[in-house]
Structures are given as C-alpha cells and as structure tokens.
Length: 430
Image (cartoon, rainbow, N blue to C red):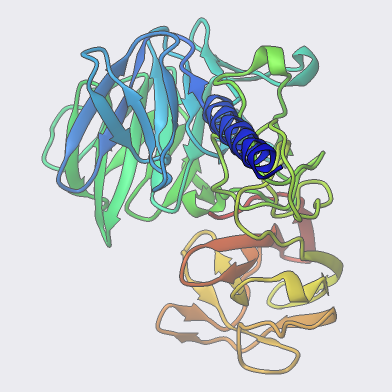
C-alpha cells in the first residue's frame, strides 16, 4: 500500500514537472516576435551610437529588464531599448513599442490627425509616401510625419526632407532622422549614415517648401506660421485615432499580455511586445474608446487605470477662458493629476485657478471642476496671466508620478478678435 502511494506521488511529480516545462516553453514562444525583413535598429544615447543589423524572420522579445533582445547578423546577442524604431531595408518603419504620430500633410487643415501606433503597424515606404497598415485595408497614407515613442525620442520622416544643424553650412538630406533630446538644449540628430550631437537652438528640419520644424523653440511651422508644439504629439490621446491591425497584416507579429480589451484597454502605454492583439488573463478593466489605454490590444503587466476627463462647457473671450471639466473614476488615477495651459506661439504657460484655488493640481474626487484663466494683462517670468486674441492655446490634463505620466485630456483652441473657434485636436504624452 505504501509502495503504491509512493509510485502515485512520483507520477504526479513527473506530470507536474512536464506541465511546467511545457508552460514555460509555450510562454517563451508566445512572447517572441519576428522582424519581417532585413533591417537595423539605431541604439543611441548621449555617449553611444550603435547600429544593429538583423536578417528577415529574426526573433526578438523582451527580457526580464523589459529591454528587447535579439541576435544580429553576426549571431551576437544584442540588447536595445524598447523605445526604438525598426528600419527595414525597403525603407519601411515600425515602432518597437507603443507611440504616436502626426500627419504633417494636415498642418494647414482645421483639424490635425494624431494616431496611436504599435509594433503591429507597419509604416511601408512606397513611391515617396508612407502607407500605415490598419484594419480592413483602410490604410493611412502620409507624405511626411513626426512620430514620438517616449518623452525624449522622435522620428521625422518624409520625402524632400533635410536638416540644418549649427556650424554646418550645408543642409543634410535624408529620408528620415531620429531625434533624441539628451538634456536641456542638447539633442542628437541621427540616421543610418550620420549622427550629430548639437544644440537644439539653430537646428531646423525642412520638409518641402512649407514645413519647418524648429528644435530650438519646439514648434512646427507651416508657411511661417507656428501650427503646433512637438510636445503635442503625445501617446494614448483622448481622441487619438487607433490604427488597429488584423493578425494577417501586422508589422511585427503579436504577443501575449495580462488584460484584454477591445477599442482600447486601459493599460500602460509601455506594454508592448506582448500587449498588442495578444491574449491573456488578468484583472485589468477595459477603457472606453482607448482612454489612456494601450489601444487595440491587451494591457501590460502593470495595474491599469481608466479614469476619464470630459469637457462639459467652455466660455472663452478674447482674453480669458472658463472651462468646466468632469472627472470620472478618480480613484484609478496614479500619481498627481495636473492641468497645464500653454501658449502655442510663445511656449509660455498660462496662469489659472482650479475651483478658485491658485494651483494646477486637480483634486482626486469624482465630479466637475472649473479652470479659469485671469484677465489681468501681466506676465510673470514665462507665465502669462491672460489670453491673447487670435492665438492658439493648448490645454492638457495629465497624471504624474515618479515613473511615468498619463494623459487624460487635451484640446487646442484659438481665440478670435470677437470670440473663439474651438478646434477639436487631441493627443497624449508618455
């Protein structure tokens, strides 16, 4: 009898071990993605400029430190930051993690489109234009765009693109340039051929005859008029357009995550390589229309939030703003919820009160709150105390903690001499 029990225990132990091994192998395989074609990744910091080349179908995945690992063409194991762009030999591009892009073709339109993109969205290069894969073959076509993948890294791509950097007499042409803001006033501008560490002041990108991107003042100009700030390109915007993809039209395959959702799980923006179009189980709740969510895929391993900020009303004169907003599910906000109003032309912050208090911190309680600017004609340092007629202003509501920030609301409006015309433009910040 004792012998039979011993045999049963041994048998169960062996079965459990086999199941654990199978589960571990399955998890490893599910988290591995593949590069579509031959290509490279630029791994750049303030002190390094590395270029890692890979072959088609090379597998890559995240390690325990959330870095991306793969084998290069020489079979060397390399590690890169997930906030990197993948460049394929045919000129196509993908983001290794979730990011956002703005279509520069629309700079002169009343509404500018912002898109959330993931590692599943292949940005194909075709005859001096880019085609971004989406569901149902409703692809987005742009001639030029700016993409943002984290707080400090951007990519500028398009036909007829060049950059003028300080102390260089000639413009440098390229199909794309990556931009890394290293510290206050210092940037790196680089592509496969060149890399320059220069001051932001005096660094200009030119796209065609109409578009100038000035890194010195952080503005994008169309026909000499400032249209937007680079910082307006933010991730997981209130109404950013989700560029969802089918399983058979992805740019980098799909992985697994810990929370599922449709139309935008309210997961952390950094949950990529395993959070887009994957499956899994978890306690995450889904967000509505992608509010502060990971979008079309599953959430990340982190606890998620689905707080929402909605516009209730706005009363704008030529020199002041009185806006009422509604905060829902306040207990889900991580960190401190803050409001910012910025003059797009000057980059200066605008002074205001929240519920009659001289603060930009929003109380974390469900319900409405009022943001009111001053009509006093004064400037304190770089803070303006009134709105100017016929001027664009950017209102943002963000949560901030020691690790990251999440955007809950963003809107640009333009004052006029005899009133205001609200422009429905949304974006987010990582």
